[in-house]
Length: 67
Image 1: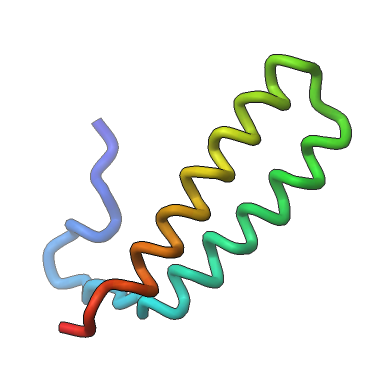
Image 2 (image 1 turned 90 degrees about the vertical axis):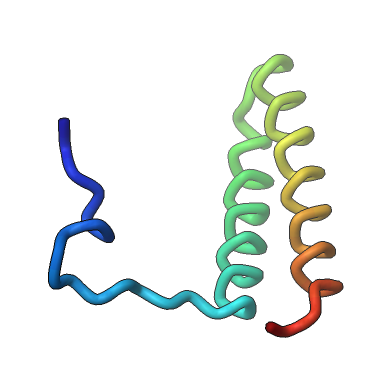
């Protein structure tokens, strides 16, 4: 089984800020919207549902207090 690169002993953990997570998720939404132009009916529905979940996740991240 392949080992997760973040779990290799001696390797520093990568920190991703909340802002970067939000930007990454927004980019995923844009990429999915482009894919929707070429998707069949079933795939289109799947991508739309996924983007809705992504939008809710972004809102949760924005509402989440800083720790």
